[in-house]
Length: 293
Ligand SMILES: [Fe+2]
Image (cartoon, rainbow, N blue to C red; front, top):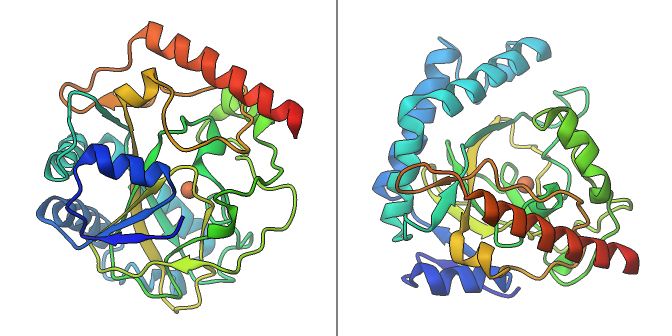
């Protein structure tokens, strides 16, 4: 991991390979990402009424704030236009929609440090998305809804690209089966060295594209304003069937999830036999790694 590509012109095949090698991609706002971020912005601005969504935390009790956030998440995932807007993003970034599968976007609201009783939320601590039973070819498409600042953004922790971290991802299956959305997500079993870290700052509607194997976290928000962002994930059919992607150094899950992903062209799910083979191969590899832990 040594490069941040800015507005790269690489095609999707080259770009994916660079991402699997640990590189980061940052893009200026484009028409499809502006549409998507503006859609979410309209949603939250309508939902908060007269309050500025980035300042609403100062006027609302925590439970009310979290309830509103939960409503936004559901609305975004269930809205008929959401999938179309994701398809438009993938098209604009020249992905092959017949082979690119995506999941539904998640809205994240990261208020200022100290507002939430458990200040380190589910997705705030350093983690790899691949710990959550995801394929090693997972890509994370991360889009800010309002302009980022160094004090309210996502951070990457490059020392861990090649360095395994003991974690409890081997127990994820049990939690996931109970309730995936509310599951206790895997976390490191020892303190992560935050420094050195790379904080990306780009405008609203920009895009940060990175491997699900990147160690990343939400920076402790000391900006005075809530961070709002959305992210969705993609996997490429060829990379699933050839077991390609980032190198697995510490994902131990005993379940491999592909069921959330929909094909870019017609929203079809992965065929059952592909899911079964992926599950078998991934879990075999994860268990082999776990033995060496
Ligand atoms: Fe994440």
